[in-house]
Amino acid sequence: MLQLWRVLVAGARNFFRNAWLSTAATAVMTVTLTIIVVSFISNSALTDTIKGLTDKIVLSVYLQDGITDEQKALIQNRLKATGDVQQIVYVTKDQAISRYKEKNKNNPVNLEALELSGNNLPASYEVHLTDRNKLNDVIKAASSPDLKPLLDQKNPISISGSLKEGVQKIIHGSDFVIRLGLIASVIFLIISTLIIFNTIRMAIFTRRDEIEIMKLVGATKWFIRGPFLFEATLYGTVGAIIATALAYMLLLGGGPQLRDYIDVQATTTFFTSYPILIIGAEILIGMCIGIFSSLLAMSRYLKL
Image (cartoon, rainbow, N blue to C red; front, side, top):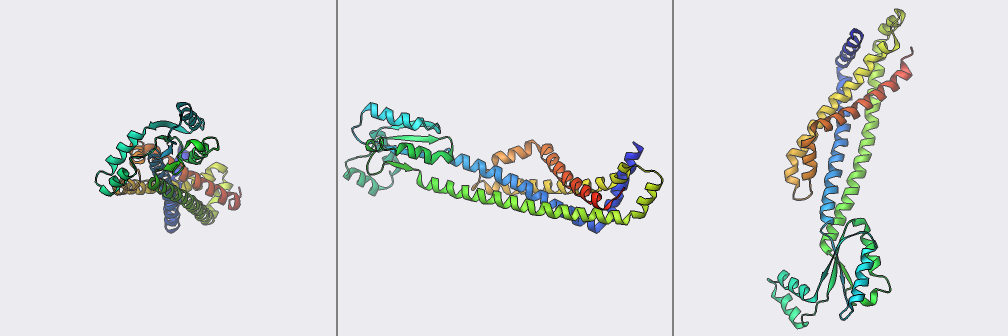
């Protein structure tokens, strides 16, 4: 225990002795870990947003007038066979007309157009999907050659138009944010590694006389290397604490303003429910970066 205490004290002394290098290493580590946790928050929030909007997407398959019950059952079974359908709702012509009138009750022009057309809206199947990525598969199944004659010829298939476009925009934005976060994390991860590597290298050079004396008096390799490893873990630990605090400030402070645009409720709940897990994961990542950089520097410059 005494040796361990001496190792920790020596590592902490190195941390404060090279104040400028320690500050630079900790700052870059903070930026790196902040980018990592913000990327996680963004990915989680955008995934929840996309799922919420996807649940509202409805694929409407409009039926030809006069088809038989057997033909209706064939269409329904073919849609179910894709395996990506959560629910199929049959909407009769009367229900379609009632919905249209309710939706356009304040729009007399559209209501008049419906009357002039003879209240002629087709029956349809409303398909609720389980996976947004399988939308084209369901459309392909509904558009198969043997089903096509059974569908309305003017408008056989439609998707909640503006909603679909909104989901696609969020999907593209989500992919961009994920790629950007990954690239930025890798870049700053490399920078952090290099800065800590050089910080440990400078510490080794600064203590080279002390290290030689320790070797002469029979100090173990672990006892000599220990302070440098502990110093590197301090960079990761301090950086992780600051990064986590910044992430919580961003999420809890900016979350209410973002709720009109993306769904951050589940992510906020997770972060407020498991703060120990979040900060523990951040510290672990920071310590791993620091230890790896320290071992890299010692393997090159600390010959024992």
